[in-house]
Image (cartoon, rainbow, N blue to C red):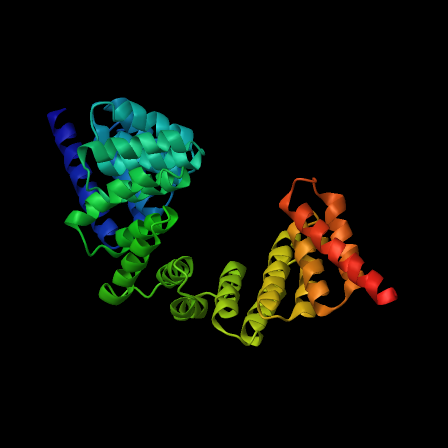
Length: 379
């Protein structure tokens, strides 16, 4: 009997040696075959089951790996490593409720950063951002410089528009790691969203010039920071640099058109960008309305009254709630000398506005002027 168990033990050791060699050669399927044969005579052997689970995991057979780790967790509930592997596999298999359940139970006393973040990620997949934030915050309470947890927590705070808390957390981290490119980018964007455009300009300049970050995000928000500060000439270069990286964003095309409209007396450069933005759109009434209104304002600012009126009328037709577009179109027509058409559009404004509204008062005054002028012309 003793000889039998010694022989079985030697066979198992030899089998494990063969498994380890096969794993080193990435021959996971063959290693699994050896382990299955070994387990036939000893189906609850923890070492063999653990090796088999690991082979399945390394081979990418997540379903089988999870099954074996669940067996191991039941056999050895005190061994948290098996539970943690089950958590990871549940996430990979998109069984997010199971991942949360396993994590909530296993991490009652422990705050293992990577696994706590994984539970937060599972909550995010379930569209429960409040629960996800609680898990990320839990990590940060014990490990305030955990970069992964901070980035994900900051993203949730930004989504909630809790910019002050996000800024405080990120800036605290940057005090220790001032050259972290990704975290600097997050901090700079928070400054922009907070309306701190001088600060965001300086932070994006630091990213570009000191940290050599020439990403789309940095060029875009540097340009937009200049726009918000009224520095349209300085905004042009970074916005065009962003366009060179990604020319798929119609809002960027509109931003460049706006910069051109403010920077150049000649309307043609801006008009080319407005046309580019228009050509990028699928039928989208709201976006086309914005394009036409911006073009109308551009031509109005350059005393090109007839063209301004044409685009403002197009804008109004796409968004009849914007009575101010109709009013400015009427004023452009009046300045262009087309008094009858101007009068019709002023009447449109009067029909759509309350008597106390500024647009009504403006239109009423201008219509009276036109009627008097037309009367004089008829005499």
